[in-house]
Image 1 (cartoon, rainbow, N blue to C red):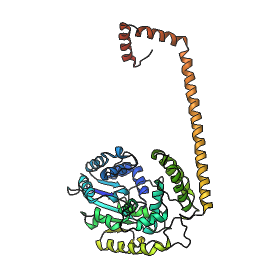
Image 2 (cartoon, helix red, strand yellow):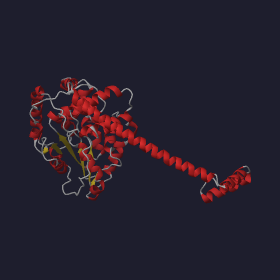
Image 3 (cartoon, rainbow, N blue to C red):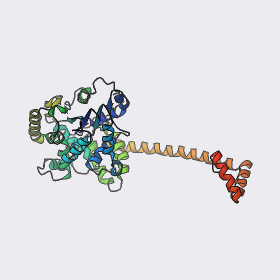
Length: 403
């Protein structure tokens, strides 16, 4: 039974992909320090979360079956500290959370700690719309904002957004059976600060201080896009969603175009919260800060980080972008697709040449007199019972099926 389990349950867009990349690549180093990050593949904890919450997600249901129980079993069998991390766990229901905690040994001697990383809504709201677009959504920014502000939260967008972003509610659900000192709130620093500050906060919350982890190769695996780039992606979605299957969309659109190409265009105007929504967000953030302080959780960072930056001086509306900027982003996207197609064509030509060489070598081998003689003997033997018996013995000895 694990002595301690650290459950990092979100929220999205708070450096979670980076943390998971560090943990994944340093599994052996962590194990030597008495820390388990149980994963045979990078998305193992994602699949476990899908299984726990029975979520359909792009055809991964079959791969997720049994993933949570398998993960929990590895955690229970480990003697030291175990870490579980995925941001979609933030949406788990009380019943699912109860099952998760029990399966990890809570109440049976294992000390469970909750880690929740949080970022100000000024950044989270536009970031969440962009994530929707990167997952094939076609709705505009204004429509998204209307659904988020709807007090009924009746739509899929509104329900999901607050499910993964409403900090007091997530802490209430996940921390219902945990003492406050076992609940750790990690705040994301304001923009412009040193990038290593956030990792130091995660390291403190996860008990990784002093562990010699390799951070150099870690990738911030979920980069953001600017206004024209996000607009371009939304327009692409409108044209390809009906014809491009999810299995092709992810590598071609989300990875090749969004993450590897459009995210590198850093001079474009950034997505931002509309200035007129800042008072509404400020009111919510102040209430959250007061609630977290009242509950007495362990805060790693500064709760004032949740206040968010003031309105931008020049707001760029993604529903009405500068078309020249969108066109330039489109040219870069076309360039990437052309170069990638050329690379694939060269790979196909090279592989075809290798196949042709192999075929020629085989044909030359088949044409030799010794091969024709062996083949004739083999066919003669196959035509009789005694010959077939002899061949079976020969195959057992030599491990082959033909002469």
